[in-house]
Length: 293
Image 1 (cartoon, rainbow, N blue to C red):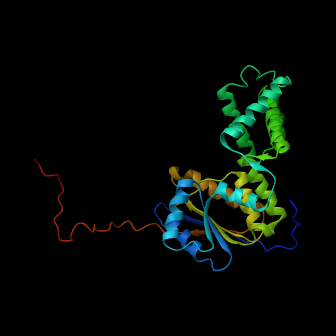
Image 2 (image 1 turned 90 degrees about the horizontal axis):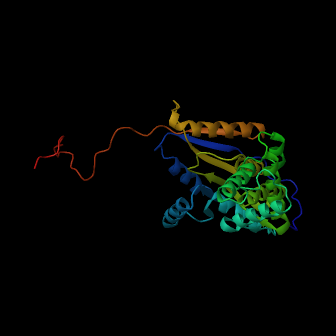
Image 3 (image 1 turned 180 degrees about the horizontal axis):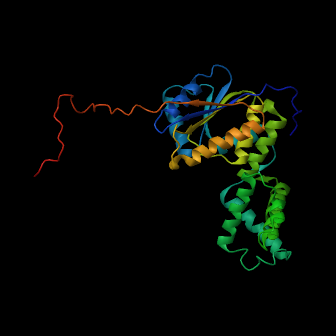
């Protein structure tokens, strides 16, 4: 990258959690905040591509896409990396799987997998290794720490595989989604001018975030970009909402550790009073039992 590191950047912006019960119009409030951005650009981030496509169509029909963009988190990360003109080539799916397999073959040839050699190339083992690589990156855990854990005899071999895979991608100028997220975090931290056109980033319909994803949000907020996150929550927590409460607590703790303000806005519960059906006149009798034939 040929950019010169940025001098003084914008002051830190808060992270706002918009918390409300199910069916409390959280998405509508998010859309209102999205539409209210008068300067700069706004990004609305949704978990799934289908959700993104549906919302994009709705906003386009309503004429609400001027200076506003709807993306998945993966698309948002890739856009940051693309705007930085980094040389790393994004990979996913089968290409990533082939890189993992090639890494395993290299270590087998070098006789560095004495415990795992009999199963290292089994489909199930390769799938588990793929999950492990993702978990290590998502939790921002250095592969070397896996060897230090020493819980199992093969921990050091898994650590070697993870380190070799990371080194392989770097040597070939490749980046899977996990590495792209790491690149996006470091890029925004070093060159905040790349995202200074952003005024607001909204994350709607998420129920949890990985440590790496939270690190990206904190980095954006640290450079003056307002973050709004919708979360499901109720005054009286229920077992079904435990994951949302955990996410809320995790975000609050992360903000506190980073000295970033975390504001919580509560939405009221929806009106439980059922509305009369438009298809049935108010004077029509109500049949409590189905008619017999």
